[in-house]
Image (tube, rainbow, N blue to C red; front, side, top):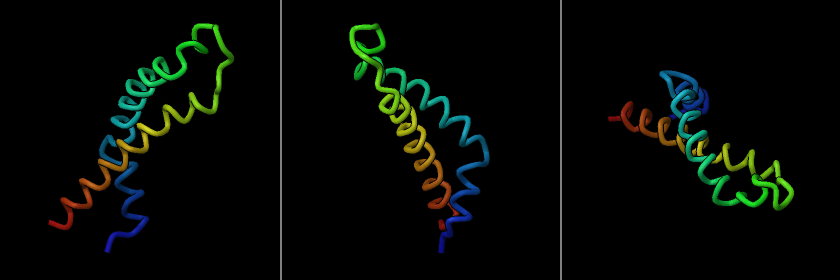
Length: 76
């Protein structure tokens, strides 16, 4: 049985945070330019919550993918 402790250990080991951060920076930047380009270039007010969330979601998805891969590999 997979525990939360094991999943957290996988999430913070073997370069997972760094890879997730790189993915979040690339994907989050592209998504922010698409979704909030008007605000970023001065036509509208910036929604900082949306900007933060747009970077957090790819980070979480990438980390989840890495953790689930390692758990599946451990079980095999």
